[in-house]
Length: 311
Ligand SMILES: [Zn+2]
Image 1 (cartoon, rainbow, N blue to C red):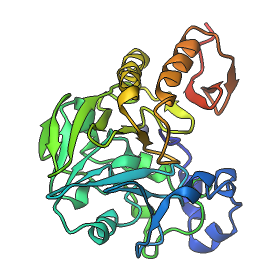
Image 2: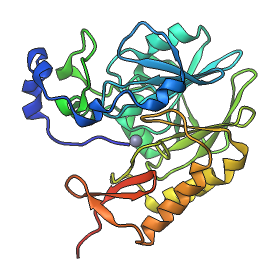
Image 3: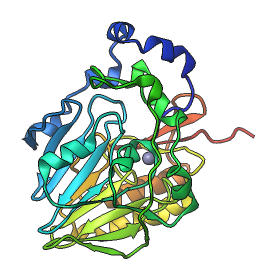
Image 4: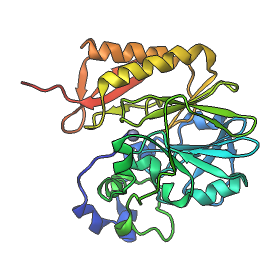
């Protein structure tokens, strides 16, 4: 998924607490909480910026409902180690949350390196990365994408105490080692396998826990409009990647995406392929969204994409 890139200067001045309190409540915020969360076990944590749920045994979904991305990071716990799949927005302290959930050593892996998934990377000592130039560039940190995440239309409720909007940026992090398609992480009693699923970004991966039937799909699939409009998005690669995921559907019990809602049924994966094929075959009408972007909708699956060129 991704953020808008511009705006900024005007909003900087509006971000003083008093003005933010007067900002109109964005539509996406009015729709919360999403009904799917009612049936999930909630795990209390001390930081009100995060909500934590337990969608499967040994899996914590760390959700950020106060920002429009509604990013979800996953802490996947084995007997000896835990793996944190994404580190959220970096608006509040995700490391502190993970320390309340497990005492085991934590390794970090990112579903991809868009700013809303790597915000807390800098806090951790072991961060694996895909061996791509896109990953290396993003690990240098950035300011602009982060700033676009905290305009008043992107915030639901209040920012964490002590958060400094002007200083907010994606902080650089060190890549400990590179990972590749097929690599496995043994957490003790739980093995996670890396599947390269490029498309949304060149470094997009999914994680499979075969023994427990779990598939973590990052931004390759989540139950909301899938953002496929950025320059780094490769639609041919995406088409191939979702086929690989769909082939796994019979072995999977639960699909866990990186935004909005942490649970989806595996039957959505073959439907995702069919929906995307229909879009690419120009069988789906495009409805205009913001400048240069259109939304394609096939039943409950939708894609936010670049508007087709008119010449
Ligand atoms: Zn993304």
